[in-house]
Length: 371
Ligand SMILES: NC(=O)c1ccc[n+]([C@@H]2O[C@H](COP(=O)([O-])OP(=O)(O)OC[C@H]3O[C@@H](n4cnc5c(N)ncnc54)[C@H](O)[C@@H]3O)[C@@H](O)[C@H]2O)c1
Ligand SMILES: C[C@@H](O)[C@H](N)C(=O)O
Image (cartoon, rainbow, N blue to C red; front, side):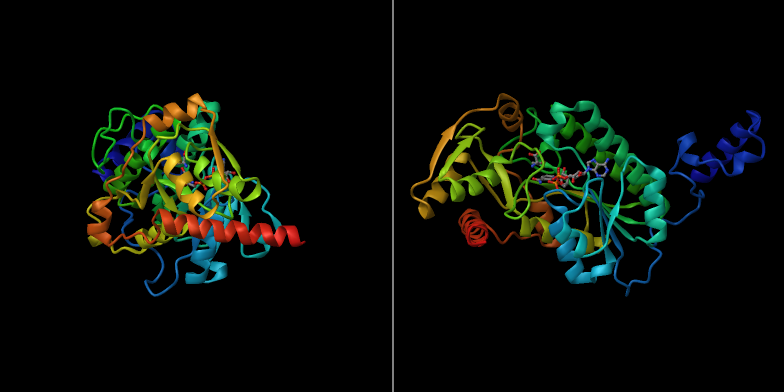
């Protein structure tokens, strides 16, 4: 079919007088297949030997998740085999801990150059505008989350990369079943973030079926981390509460006390990502999976924190934008397919999460005040 289309396109180019350039013109510009790909290229085979370590590029790597992922992958595959990239200037510890490179995902040629020059084999695509920030800047969110993704898909397909794109609980909406939310159900999100993530899931799966792209996607819940800040989402309160609790003993929550959302500690999230990337293709009955660890409300989280910090005072000042988003998202996430297919299992429930976060932030703030 691809060969027939290719023939058709060459014919169209000839009849429109494109002359000798027709053979070198980027096929993406005539929009039937990824750019500059011969119609019979075999994308299922990656170009590195199976015994080699993958050479990984992480886009949007300076956000909440990228630095931690790079650290974990470098332990596994070697420091120089994992390149972090972003459009922001890296802090000095990140810059000195391994390869960092400037990459704007809206610049297709720059991306291609990085992939080619560094012989990249795995691409982890983390660049995005999250839910709350996206609603505040819809056109930028559309560019980064949708146009940027198109560049990533084409680069990955053309160079035979294994591509990981995270999706989110935000890919569901008010008409989805919310308690629990299965992998396959109605997805009609009401945020540009959610719409762009459903688009990413569908485009990735389309490229998988159409071009053999090794596309892998996990729908993350809200991720909680101690040493990296969230980038403007609806679940950010669940990180901020720990910092405020340790620093001031007070926290003002921007969601209602009974707002239940699925959540996960970052260590589980990053391990799930590596496990999904390493899973043999034969065990993946789907290319997009829900993953989950726990679900709680602000009230329940505060209660768990108060067991260890009894003086903590929590008040509520609702942000209507974030509240409306949270009210349309899953309350519990059904991740039984991930557990069945590739053995997903979380380590951190709410008590372990709270203990670990407080240990981390508490020891960090003791170090800061001693300096
Ligand atoms: N953190 C969570 O709770 C969570 C939950 C579900 C899904 N996810 C997904 O995981 C991924 C990583 O999330 P995060 O929390 O680290 O996000 P983040 O907002 O903290 O970081 C995103 C990064 O993308 C970068 N970026 C923006 N525009 C760019 C561009 N044009 N080119 C290159 N980089 C650009 C930003 O500079 C930023 O460092 C995102 O795709 C997000 O949707 C995150
Ligand atoms: C849930 C996730 O996608 C992100 N933390 C957000 O709230 O936007």
